[in-house]
Image (tube, rainbow, N blue to C red; front, side, top):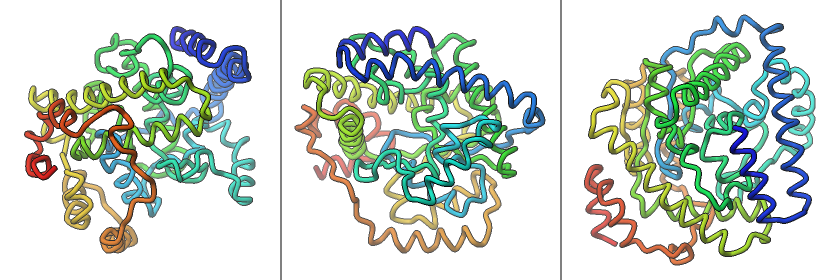
Length: 370
């Protein structure tokens, strides 16, 4: 973690020079780290019973970003009957700290000043909205989000340790997942809801470690043609970078980031494909669902998910799913996906580089129509 922080500071200096960004990144992360560790330690005194909680048959939604992971996560959790994290819960995983922070959160929500990231970039974040639990790994500096949300995005060096989690040393990879488990336990204790449904798409790279800690976990892997996900993901990242840093980033650093991001996207697809081919994931633990099936026949996809996971949904959720299925017919994307040319890519290149995806998941007909 110290090495990652050191590189963040170096990259910040090289990208922004002596600026307010450098000041913020030098002082805020150490302060946040100290407060987090202190508040988590206080949990061991005031809320020690959380450790007795068992995380049983958690459901993990994985897959390439923009494959419908957020959509499915929100559909399944819309009635708030399962254990899921709102954004502020992720920012404040400590039960002790939540007691102190909640009045402020309630005030911000009440006065409609709870937006963290605007919706128009393609994936907005609000304090009181269910968010992807992959962000919990930011507290361990062990997720690809570090390569987006910090100046490390513009580092001269690459950081494969923030992507290939299953290849990390055992102590490091297990430490991150055990921290994740402790967050899930705390949240079950906090909400009283035992069934975990978590969206952790980048943790597709840590499936094997997750299975070591959660052997009864159920993984829902969403897959969508890469020529659809990749430009959408790159567009989202470009919007986020501009929202986060303004337009002060040198074009060559943006170009290098997007070139790397494309390669990282290919690797994410390939890793799951190789696990599947090598039979490294028991069939009983994973269900593959195509995005087009999820969108076109949500009710049938829902039936498959219920059968696979064994969850016991309420009548309220069943009705909500049925209503959502009807609404899907009129869905129109709100954000603009940039042209591939803006990222120096072509559809032909994507189809070639990810031919194994098109063949394995029967996307050839879609590719042939392009």
